[in-house]
Image (spheres, rainbow, N blue to C red):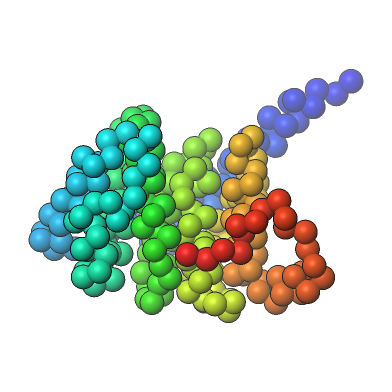
Length: 230
C-alpha cells in the first residue's frame, strides 16, 4: 500500500517552496516596507498604539477602538492619510519576529489591525495597494501564513471600494499573489476563513464570473458573512 502521508508531505513541501519563490520574486521587483511619516506622525502612531495596549492588555479584553477616547477623536478628526499611516505602523509591529512569540501581544495587535482594516473603504488606490503589499510580504511565511492575519477584513474593504468593479492592474497583481497562496492552503479551523477570502478575491479578480455564479443561485448558506462589506 502506498504511503499517502509521504505524498501529502511532499505536496506540502512543494507548495511551500512555490509560495516562498513568489514572495522572493515580489521583493526582487522592489517591495520594501517604507513608512513615509515625519517624527511627529510617528510619535502620534506610538501614542495611539500604546494607548490601545494599555486599555486592552490581554486577548480577552474584547477591545473596541471606540472605547479608547484617543481613537474616538482620531477617527473623526485625523485625515485618512494619517489613519492609513497608523494602519501600516500596526502592520509593521505585527511583523516583528520577536513579538510574534508573545501570543498575548500578537492577539491584541491582530484585533486592533482587524478593526482598522474594517473601517474602510479606501478613497486612495495607492494606500490600498501599499497595505495589500504589506499584508502579503510581511506576514510570516510558512505555517503562520497570510490567513493568520486579518486579510479577510482587508479584502472586504477593497471589495467595498471597487463596488463590484474589477481591481486595477497593480492592486490585482497583489491580489493574485494572495489568491495563489491561499489556494494551496489548508489548516483545520481556518477552512471558512480561506473560503471567505477566496470568494472575495474571485469577485475582485473575475467579477463577471461571480455575477454569473450568483445568477445560478450558489449555496453560500454556510458562510453567511461572505458578502458583507466593511
